[in-house]
Every structure is written in C-alpha cells, then in structure tokens.
Image 1 (cartoon, rainbow, N blue to C red):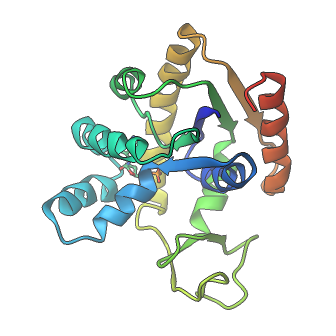
Image 2 (cartoon, protein in one colour):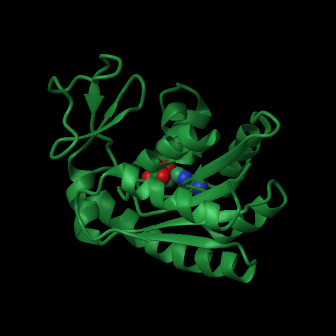
Image 3 (tube, protein in one colour):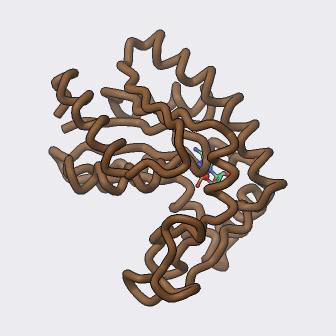
Length: 218
Ligand code: AMP
C-alpha cells in the first residue's frame, strides 16, 4: 500500500498517469480538479463558490478544499493506498495533510511550457465519464463524441491561453516551495522529465513503477 502525491503542471499528464497507476497498483486517485468540476455542475452555493475560483484560475479557499479532501480519504477502504492529484497546492495545505494521512512518496512530472501549451489547447474531456482526449494526438473516433461512453466532449473553460498562463505561473510558484517542504520531511521524490510532445503513457508509468519498486514501496 502506497500513499503518493503526483506533481505536474496542468497538461503534464497527471490524470492519464494516475489512472494507469491506479489500475496497476490498486490505488484510489483523488483528483481535486475533478472533484471541483463535479461540484461546479451542482446548483448549490458550494458549487457556485467553487466555480467562481476555478473559472478565474484561482485556488479554491483552503477551508473548503481541506474539508473535501478529508471526506475523500475517509471513503478509501482499509488497505488501499491513494494518489493525490492537485493537492497540496500551498504550504498550508501540505502542513494540514500531515494530520490527515502519511505520504510515502512524491511523483514529479517535469514538462517544458511549450509542450504544456500544445497539449492543453487541444485537450477535450467527456462531459459524462471524464475521459481525456487530445485533438492532435489522442483523437476520439467520432468528432466530439467519447469513444468509451458516447458522451459529449467539451473544452474546459480554464483550458484557454489566458488562463493557462496564470495556471502555469501559479504552478511554478507553489510547486518549488512544496518540493522543498517535502524534502525537509525526507519524503522520497521520483522525477520524470519529458523532452517530447508525445511519450507513450505506459513508458512513464513503467518508469514510476520501477522506481517505486527500488524504494520497496510496491
Ligand atoms: P486542476 O484540474 O488540478 O488543474 O484544477 C483545476 C482548478 O481547481 C484549479 O485551477 C483550482 O481552481 C482548483 N483546485 C484544484 N486543486 C486545488 C487545491 N488543492 N486547492 C485549491 N484549489 C484547487
């Protein structure tokens, strides 16, 4: 059983890799972005509050985020580990996490900005099942339709050039201090650096699994 955090800029492939690792290692994936996008669909005051932050490319307040995280971790069956995607995003969240769960390892994706911008501008998601496509290199069989469930594909409103720049700046800012923080806590960090636009996801996942084995974490 391993509890991991995956760090990577928006569009670095975190969601894809986490989903593959989930199947390989029997993990739960807790993606804060996905959880917030689900909440945004609801016509509730929480949904509206979350929407106002996400649409602007800003972080949702820690109080709301931590509450949601605690609920998610509490749902995980005994004996199962997890991958946190999109959490923590600041030092206050990292510190709060210590009292919620023990983190065994950090998985870090290092991807140059030009690759991120190419990927994010072509990214499309299924409204129904959340599957991720890319208009350049992971096209659905039928335009605008999910291969897996037939749902309608859409572009995230925050996947546009203006907002992505804000999100990349935010990411750089928040991640450097978080990586330093986990280093001081002696949490091992496995880094994967991308140098190409298209790397088969399995290659990255196999690399992570091999490194986790070396650390005797799986
Ligand atoms: P993501 O899918 O990880 O890019 O997240 C999309 C948006 O959800 C972010 O731009 C934030 O507005 C919000 N969000 C995701 N994770 C967090 C977090 N840990 N704390 C606060 N807001 C978050």
